[in-house]
Every structure is written in C-alpha cells, then in structure tokens.
Length: 126
Image (tube, rainbow, N blue to C red):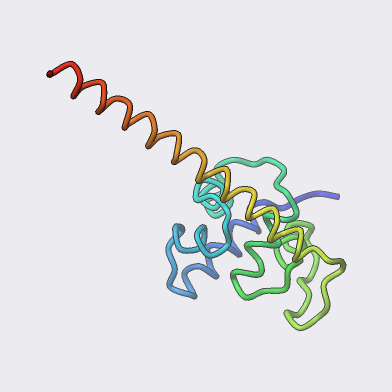
C-alpha cells in the first residue's frame, strides 16, 4: 500500500490555516513536538510516524482519530462521529504524556546545566 505523506501535509496545513492556528499551538494542543508537526505539515522529512502521533493530530484538529491515517493511505477519512477502530485514544494520550515528560526532562537538564554554569561563574569571581 502506498503512503501519501504529501496529502497528509496538505490536509494538516489546510486545517491549521482554517482554524487560524500556528504550528506551536497545534503542537501544544496535540502534545506532539513542534519539530514533528513542522516536518509533517511541510513534508520536509518523509519517515514512518506512529499511528498514535497521527491520531493525536487528527483528534486535535477536530477530525476522527483515524482521519490522517486514512489520508495517508489514500482512503476516504471516516466521519468524526464514527467510532474508532480500537481503544487508540488511551494509547494516544499515554504516548503524548510520555513525549511531554521527555521534553520536560530535557528542559530540566538544560536548566540544571545553566545553573551550574552560573554558580561556577559566581564562585570564580569571589
């Protein structure tokens, strides 16, 4: 089955513009990193993405959880009111939480490094 990542990019881009959002807003609302949103929206890097990532973006954009997966596979997207194929919403939320925690840990590491640099600088001036 061929995958159409350009169609995914177009669908995301059109919906983001329709909603009047920026990439950062979509990333924050979906709990998907802004880098991944940028890559998908602009079709700059074509690589396999987690179904949960596509589900998180679809849901955040007000679509059925499998909307972007259907677009990717050149199928007609399901109506937003149709039931999801599986309990993917919980998996999507857990995946988003794990990703968010990883981002928080990275930021904390950056803060710790910056603080160590400041402390070292202050101690040298004494």
